[in-house]
Length: 395
DNA sequence: TCTGGGGTCCTTAATCTA
DNA sequence: TCTGTAGATTAAGGACCC
Image 1 (tube, rainbow, N blue to C red):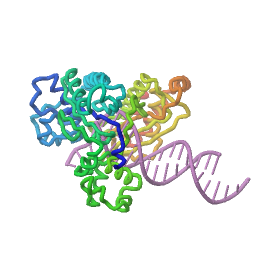
Image 2 (cartoon, rainbow, N blue to C red):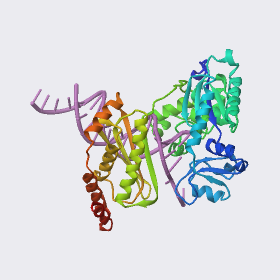
Image 3 (tube, protein in one colour):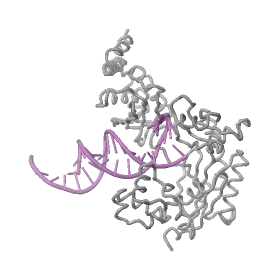
Image 4 (cartoon, helix red, strand yellow):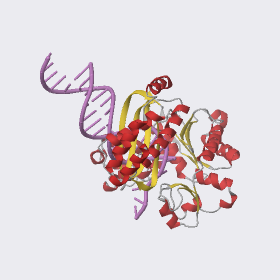
């Protein structure tokens, strides 16, 4: 027996099918049977967040540039995401899932891991539990889900992906190796574009080929840690821990401009809006963080981040804005038009909110002149044409 | 060719510190 | 006190995921 087979655990992975698009088709009967693309609107910058199965027939996939999607299917229904709606449906789904077991880990808005070990006496064999899960979700929301069941998270996840939509896949411990063998290595966790290229160069396409690969070559290409991780996955070895209520580690907001920006006032205004958004969430969740991160993407997709650790944790938008702006103005970043700007906060203090209050009051009177100074500082970077704006503001 | 937004985790390099 | 070093921390970037 391999390690993967020495287990009596059963993990389920539930994945709602084309979640955003399905919500829209459910609520708008006129969209049913039509290709639906949720994401950016054609003509603007952005990508596909979700594509209905009808849209997928045109080769439209999530994360594809919206311009590309439009070229493939100009007649599709293009919609902006309605996150409020999807969050509400998601809450409904999770409430239903918790009627099966409380040991549920939310992996995303439309995905969950469940530890269903030991539920057989109550609900029947794993396949019956999976069926029941799907039935209850559909009854409550009229949405379909795909479910995978296996001895650990990896197998459950690959299982839910195996048959879609509305699928149910059960992989018993003694079937794990055969289940994995023919799969493309790109299905493994942590294989994206770059790693995929490395596998290509090694002539490895399937999990079976990965299993047979020379250890030295793999380590040289991917590094010792990644190589070991992929080897374990190839043998079906993975965590079976389902951790309910994982705490978030950071909050961030970013915005891509529809056209690249060189105007410092515009940048600062956008940053203020983002900082306010981050601060609002932090306060609502009673979190205060010590590390502020500025993210900036220039023309040409050149992306940089700059961080600063504050002496005290904060969730004050003024501190966030001031710090992020300073990171931009004081840094060695190039003088280029800005495509995206973002701000984040992380590294929570233990007694978050109390400390934050103290620091906030200490910085209460951070004055606006200082901000205007730095705005001028940046407008200088872009030449005299923009300097006028900074001066105007003072009047 | 064109690449959102909100996250997590890993690697690496520089710096601090015991 | 000096020096070398190992380990921790910080910062930046990259890969990946949904």
